[in-house]
Image (cartoon, rainbow, N blue to C red; front, side, top):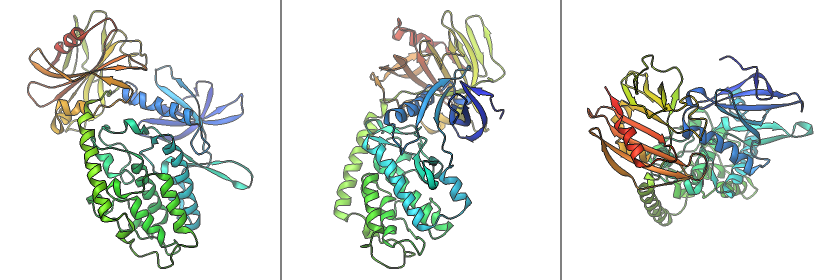
Length: 480
């Protein structure tokens, strides 16, 4: 990866990290004589409207909360190629992942650190936000004063959601091992108890008796009570607290980070009972069976409700520049690989691959973007356009309606789904009106007549058009 010389007004010194969705660079502000961390959306997701929205939402959320326990955001900008970036405070002390890789953290320090992390997550919960991806890599340290004093910072809110919009999420949303079981269910209600689970897993990683007990993939994944074995110098009551925090069912956990923090304080205080902490935590440390059963019934009702409203969705899919190598324009049509589209007057197209979607051969699946300016469409909300993707892997796991139910967007209002038959293909269409960004987004999906592939079309239609424009565009999509 070639380092850019500059990003906006900042000179780039070195690479700090690479993730699935973004790259982070160390930048230097010469005017202020200060270093910053610059987070840039990855190139292969640059045309994904939903990922772009999530990237910018993270910056807006951090700016709105502006708290000493959260990583601070200074500014946002856009590269010449249209990719957004966020300028963040530089955590010069590295991450918890780095420190755990260097060796075991002494139990007293690990307990204090876990309390600091709980306090940081409590800030999110007080503002009605659930983080959903609490891992050692997202816990950062920054020098804050003389004598080596450090701040513990919560970072990477890219998956964070307001509680009112935290159900019906797209597929897996989080990091395996630290991700609560309900986050693997697109119809589940994901609330502050998902973060309690992540905090519990962090506690186990910090305090476990050995590597085999720190492994997050334990028996609780099958719905059984987790076995928590901690180091000898950890107060024994802590194991029971972490067992409740990592319970399989959300109803059996602490309700939020503040309550978990209070339980940890009690477990490490003078009143905590003595005894060997290496024993497995008692399962009766969780809430009584009667209350547990009632809470589970309420949880199942909420899940059923979430499934009913799961069609309140909007989203996008990513493309990678470079195309499939077979793109061509013939008259008023454009072809790339097996896809051909009829172009609206004044529109052109660019061939691409569907980022994040891979066929059975391991290769990215085909896609294209069409717009009056296809290379600028994702970055410029004023431009109409469309994304067309073809996926055999998606067709093998879900239906067109099921796929659209995975495409969520909390800031838009959906119209009821409609069915339309265009050129012999049965399409499911969901239209959205949005208060921010693009005023209209239309999601549509269908099975290729052969049934072996799902065709997905996302459209941001011109403002002066109606459903006839959408139907005409869908009628012009062909698959060989």
